[in-house]
Length: 222
Image (tube, rainbow, N blue to C red; front, top):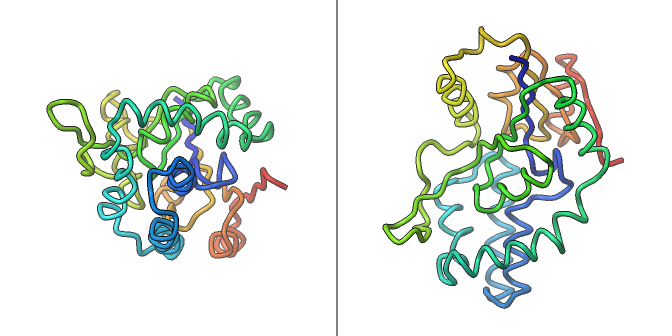
């Protein structure tokens, strides 16, 4: 197996899907604009700084859907895809995914954003294999605000990919080749694990590190 792994936010799409979903719920009137944006922007700054409390953030990020209910949340997400995500999907990013698929590589999106937000985005890219933060549900199927299992964040991305491999009777050493595309230093553990790390639309810290280590740098959104 040749494995091609992709981060999502600022890697395949030129925005943060979780942050954008939060802004979309404000537009819908589900959240007070000023209070929500202050908190949402604060969490996003923590993420970029590498200090995000992922459990606290997920409780915050799922608040609107938990209050409105999953069925209404899913209907709103269809509008979110049409109005925000699909217009942001570039042909360069689509072509990169297709190139790996056409080469016979197994393609996964590995993201620290929750599966409610990201599964439809992965499907829009034609990618069925998604590793995202799984959300716990109550007996009625509604979101609880808790994370189910290991969050796919920082070192957790490595753990989740290794579990994905183990479920198929594989280890890293069984792979013919592995590639990971990411924009963020938060993904350094997984970038260091694969055969071919690609700093994709990298933030300044990752760009500097990639140059020092001789990693390929790819800019999809120029």
